[in-house]
Length: 208
Length: 161
Image (cartoon, rainbow over all chains, first blue to last red; front, side, top):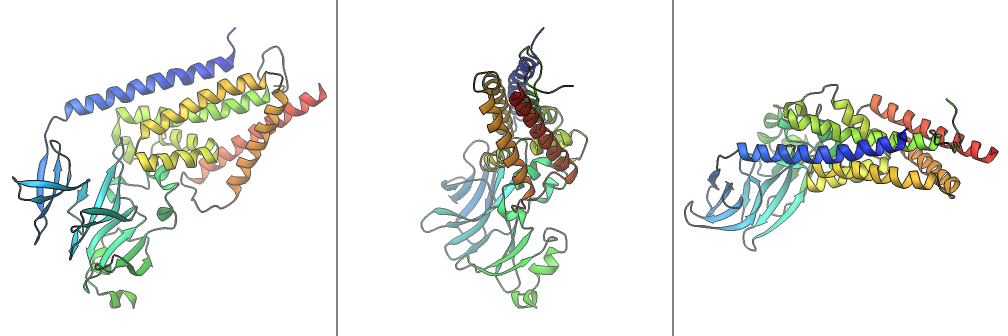
């Protein structure tokens, strides 16, 4: 009779091979099915810079027009939520995606003079500017589309993400330096009330 | 069932303890294999979700934290799940050899200490939340406690022999 110990090991070996093939085939099928080339160009208002998403060229921050341009910094940046320019400092969300499509966002600052990218906060989403001009970002949250409350991969991600273990926090940043001027804990930071609660008010009003 | 050293090749307590970790390690990949065929499951809480939750809770806490850190940096579900299963396979092969070698007693003592440490770590509030829900955490804790008892019974039987 076969040793049961061998059976467990054999089962794991089969799972390893079977799982590897399954993932490989799935990824291959998804890539074969997704043959639509993407090339969208989103100029940043008041600057010579634009954010490009492309399946033909590297995605990232470009300088120049849609037809004549050069890559400044590579990355999957967001232009939708709260991209803000202050002097030579461009604040952007940088999105990362896992194999299975779990997305997370980091707040980065691109220095347009030196063309260097600096990550200011991990697992943070820049939402815009408040009425008095400070940048408002939410730290320690997933993008709402992930539905983290029912997504075990989000829970697994959050297991070692310090910002996510302490609950959501709204940060007010000085756009000139990127330093925090005010912070407030708010677990409802990604709800619909966010705009009325933070973006339409001045920092002083929020403090009160 | 009687636990203890059995030279005829029957399951010993330590063997069972090793197997609990091995089977738990396979659960996240089973979940991901199912998920890869039906991605919409990712945004829903279904019974299949518990495969992943229980698997992550039942493996040693240090392993779960290490894999989570790896996942955060790579975004690779395939990578961490394959690593986990590969590690479980290697763990099974190595422990199989060690537990049935001349140093079997030492291996059992080391295994018991590691399980005990893991149980203590689970009781200390280290800052990370009970991410996968209390039922899974409780089942995983019970499984680890049972593993410790099995190994200790093994050691006791070894001493008597």
